Image 1 (cartoon, rainbow, N blue to C red):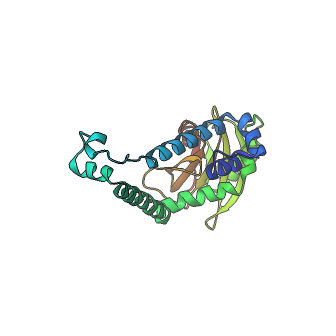
Image 2 (image 1 turned 120 degrees about the vertical axis):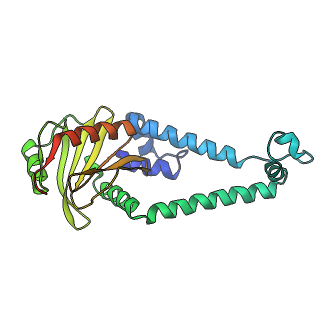
Length: 235
């Protein structure tokens, strides 16, 4: 089991992991941290939904300093559940809007592309062929002007109808995916957190660069190194 498969399994039910998932968790510090975040979030949600009002208690006994409207809600369990349902509905609407926006659709497509190549996301000190890295970048009108660190994976991939460089850069915290997207212009940085990954799509040259990893620190380290190392040689 790799990191992507583990995070999907943990996202489905962090309390019931398979034998393979447990073995991966025990060997991967990054996924241990991810699982802790999921469990903490799950506990917070459970706590929020388990608020009850004992029979005979007054609203003022529960929230003596709360506004009158809030007190009335907590005094009536049915109103509390209705409020919780409305909040949940708002969250679901937000998820739909996230998926429908054009810029967020790009982030979704980037994550979908990564899912097709999970074998690239491994911790290793074995570098990819340096000439191959230069060749793949050159196809997209990019060259290296400095060392971006250990690149362990390089591939020219089809993405939204174009061939794009797909790299994996090793950081202090683990492997980070980099997609060079000449044909996907961005006017400002877009950060996202989805499917257990942290990512950013940064304006670069005529297009953008997508950087996706397991933590914000990994993404920032890789983004800074890549942006400093590459140069666009064609408009």
